Image (cartoon, rainbow, N blue to C red):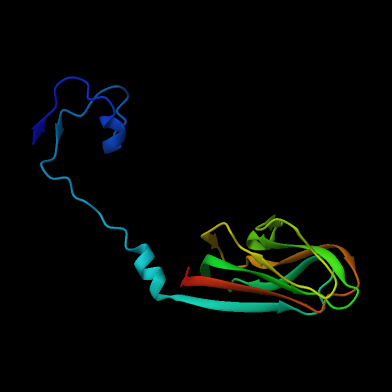
Length: 159
């Protein structure tokens, strides 16, 4: 054991000791390093998934739902909007944790007629619990878009 003398500034936060102003008198001889293997494991269960909304309209268009008993780590992905002739609107990729309130994942992007737009997911990774819904939110729509799809790269694990 090592004996500590005086007040080691910053040591309490290093060893995670909060003793209301008293310092530990001895430290163990061995400081054991740890290796986080979570990312290596999640890489082994990585896959890509896609889902589409039938007849997309203004508001939230559900494309994917995290199944019961699962947790997804969303690594990358985005949404795709296909507009036909005379169709315009504003779209954003959205998540509804646990099926609750919508949280935007991308900024809203305006789409023009006869245009295919990709809305990239730029923040992540994102952990999504069972029941979480991922989709595209449309607003200021003129006409009916041809389709909207969400594609994601995930690591899916059992909860």
